[in-house]
Image (cartoon, rainbow, N blue to C red):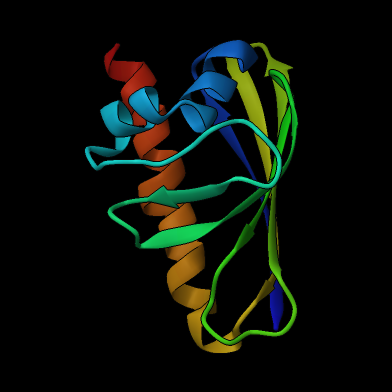
Length: 127
């Protein structure tokens, strides 16, 4: 199991970034895929047509979300924490992803960088 931590700059306010990560309609706009998401603890979520599934754990409006991601029969949850901070260019987003299965680590890191946060940044740069 491996952990991944990285910071991303998103050209949008913390409020807008939080909404884009927690509202199904906005998630669909910037991912191009159906999303199931409610910013309510203990609710299931699904992104990218069920490519990413899990359970929402905690939310702090405009600042933080915590999720457990599913990786099959894994015993320990794979925890994703996203912290959103104000930044002079919009928002600094801190990603902490713990307990990533070794065999999925490279794909997950590339997905965070090239799809998830690149897509979110592009969404706001185009808007």
